[in-house]
Image (cartoon, rainbow, N blue to C red; front, top):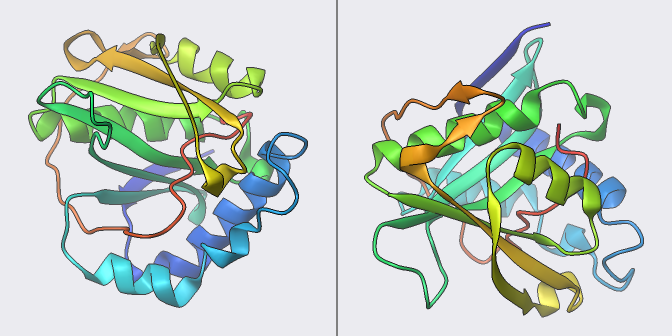
Amino acid sequence: MTIAVRAATTDDADSIVEVSLRAWEEGFRGIVPKRIDPRQAWNPERLRARLREPGETEHSVAELEGRVMGYVVVGPCRDHDAPARTGEIWALYVHPDAWRLGLGRALVRHAFGELGGAGFRAATLWTLAESPSARAFYEACGLARDGASQRREALGSSLEIRYRIALSERRVGGRAVRSCRLCLPSLEQLYVLSQRSALE
């Protein structure tokens, strides 16, 4: 089984939308109200336009045997209380057919490396409080709750909790994470959905 993580391109837009919608449908079922329709946000043409534009976020995909099955977005932390040089995993999805095959860990490792390489000293992410599998996954990746919580209409006001890690201490699956170059196109105005279940 071959897993490869690389920068996303406009050619990946349709695959990213498929991955994200399937992950939403499986991972958010019973947590996010049915009235929230992710298809309103995950429009291939809109995503393709975002991937063409420069900006402060980086989009990457994970391939399993050459097929795009995972997606991650990283950038500066958007929280008003974030200390300087704090980055964030804005979104992380793995197609349900590839859960528990190592793609989630590969994407987290890549995200930490990109943020560390860009000079960020810490990373945060938001996940759904009612998703024990997502919480267990992030904790296994070395992140810990920092006490912050929020509710957003984009997720039907479901309770979200924040996780944090110091990048100087980052380890994923027992392996040290090395930094790498940050190369950033943007993803504005999409629902940034960095939480889902069974990411592995």
